[in-house]
Image (tube, rainbow, N blue to C red; front, side, top):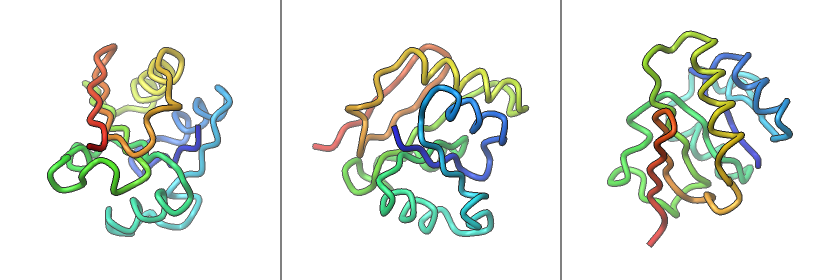
Length: 119
């Protein structure tokens, strides 16, 4: 899966995605760290990547209808420290099939995964 870890995803968590065989091109690595969310999401979509983020606002299907972007994965974690986020990334990527999630909004909280698919 082609992922774009957002600026709020620690480098160690992005590295977990790469270690698990995913193509992860970070927002920071692309020089988009200060860019508005819309620009980040547009860059991810243009590159056929799912945006991986902690930003709950990017999980709003009314504002970002599924199918209008490459996909968004929102990690809902209790703490946003590097270890907790890396563990959440590992758990999600190891246990969920990502191939059919393009264009979807996926909200992950522990082992609970909510998927909003394009209509």
